[in-house]
Length: 207
Image (cartoon, rainbow, N blue to C red; front, side, top):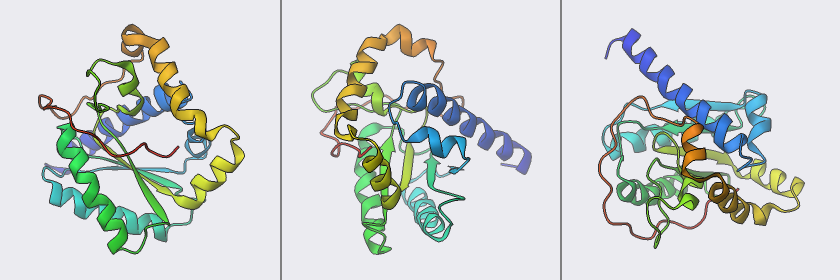
């Protein structure tokens, strides 16, 4: 991929992700903590060209190290998008174990945290079209790298943090499929493979 084509590719993926962040995560108030870092420009967007898990893991390791080394006032959090890798949710869910292992090996466990979003996210025991699944759906397979200190400060400042998950489910159920479609969330890069039988995903993502 030449530099011009890659730049366009990268910009498109980042734009799709920003649109999702603004319309869904912030717009629907799914994460009360997201607006501040977005407005301050403290979110670092990374678009990976990886097509295999091992290549994505290498990018993840690099971005974890970069986030740790960076001043939080400049880069508080990172969104790593993988439009050409782990399109199947079960494969993506399995990859998360490797991601957590990388945190431990880098001795960043307890310092950084990895949350995840996927265009075909599905809670175990639910149908694909159940609106609760859309709380964790993004245009592309996405790894969200967060600082534990930032999470703790945000939770301390939000008295009802433990209620966020349930409220998000209610918000999406009220929105419904027509409402979701009206938000215009789409992936303009990459292909999504047919979904396989769903197994139980990891535990709930911390707010």
